[in-house]
Length: 366
Image 1 (tube, rainbow, N blue to C red):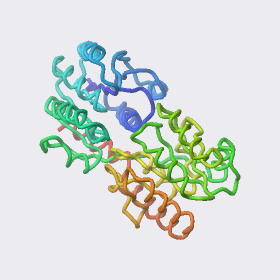
Image 2: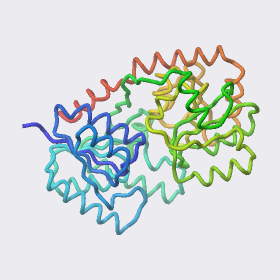
Image 3: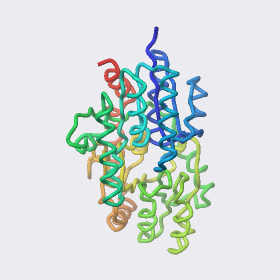
Image 4: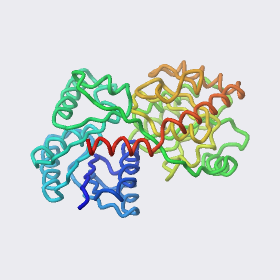
């Protein structure tokens, strides 16, 4: 009889943690009985169903703190664990981790694994919020049997130095759209000229992703266009910022595109201006696509990109160094091609989905 793995994630949308869960669950479904519990419906749930992976909805499991809903989410997860009786519960994201670890202990789950996709207490929030999140992270680690961090950076930040194991995210080979086809689609959608120099990013429109910094940097760099693929809660604020800076003709929020990474070759340069990251899939995808990268030196980003060797790392929270880097990339095509080649080689060697799955399986069985 096969062991059962029950994955838990807060959101049913397609983000970094969702991509990680999807890659793991689909890779392991031939060896384990795989079930996924998620806080809501969305693209992740749809993709899992297409791969015949059973999902359970936990209605009250939401990203934001809410005392009543959190208590109900604890009860709902407890019922799911008692019904499914998994051999392993694999928790993803801070909220699912904290509530899920307690529910799994109460339900007597034999093995609890928690993956940290960037510590929540490392986000730019108030000191009180940081302290609360730090304590919650500590409790989650204590309740879990194993903690996985997707970067060495997060391993070093583990509360009280508790042990965690770093397993970098990895990706399979992607069938990218050819550059001509990708540019035609993206540039037409954005309404910009075919000969434009395009800085692009794929990100949820959330404060952590720093899209406001990218817009402010674009104001300082003449003659280039910025394309942002993604949706999120910050859209209205970002649209207001674009209007205030009179950048509507050069900065384009073109919304969500399914499998957006397949269009990466449309960009001349990929930019990730995040305030907080774990180990971002977007940079791995850009590297595999052969697109040069500018990124904020946060979280595990420097574990992928070597500054001035396979890309350019800039200070986070600041639009000025980002603008300077964009100007340099705009005027130095030979340099950025060298960066792109070096990053592609590094991603293909060190960040494979095969290694990620193998090491995670070892955690399950150890």
